[in-house]
Image (cartoon, rainbow, N blue to C red; front, top):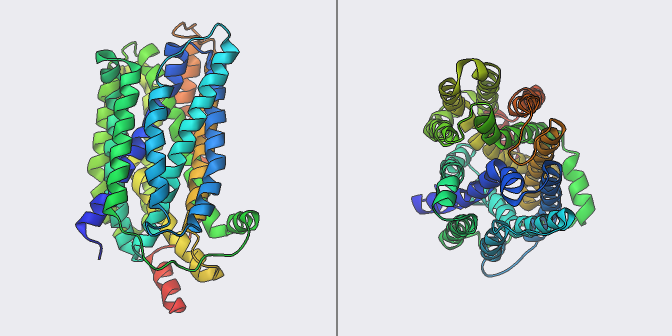
Length: 433
């Protein structure tokens, strides 16, 4: 059994991670369009390029972290270095600059954003690969993920609710420094609280390309990976759209913070509930129920919000958090089971870094496409730096609800075929003994 120190030390690492992802998801497109003054289409494209580059570096980091040997472990040296660089590039990204040529501005923000993503990849990929190394127990992995995702929700909460108050009280660069500092400190706590296994496990000797091709042929992995990717895409679209929805549909940007507090509070409170329920009905069913709740909430919010007003929207968003909490816990609890399935099925050695890197690669591709799509749609519907046309509101509504729901439906249709439950897992382990 894992100690409380290990659970807390591991869990807090994702506070900084979700702080980072939330700031990017909720505010970076808005920062580029309304603070830096970049065209929405170019802003969305900059986000897409940065995220695609981020995704490309994930498999490379995962592959080489699997093969790293040091007295500090395979993962922690990367986390240590990446956290330091992430701090500096957070400040740089959120320091507004101006150029006479808009294309120069586009190239600059794209470069800085790409460097920041590269730095945080060194933190995130090795961190995600730690979980299956810390415990092999089916339920303890869910419990450990529960700790991790409780901190993740706190990070999301801080990223969503504190950005604008800090900006309004100080400036965007100060906000970048504060949030980058939190990312640095939480990563370092994980580095010094966790002790990786001293014995280096057997590692697959396959080459870089052949390793990833082989992993992507595994049907069970794809049945978990594709729903995760589609859910991330839909959720990222909604995240990027909400600040515009409250500012230009409800005409009250300040209520956005209250809505996020409600959403994330319900998400945090419901994590222990869903962890307990998963012991009864399984991770897959819990995940499907949760994302169905989110889907219904999103539809109600966007289709009826204009009719019933912002208070109705805040209530619906808060209740949607009940389902959203499954998105924090279940996919990250499912992934270690897939890693174990690969170990016992293919006998190629442990490949946590490879699986974790593909997992985050797909999520970043989904996020990149979602944010770019938001920017492109806003541009098509006439949005430009706070100036909107009557048709612009239609575009905002589309990216806040109806379009993301299509991604949710695709994810649910595939997830229903994912096979690993407790009985399947325990039988797999028994046969391997």
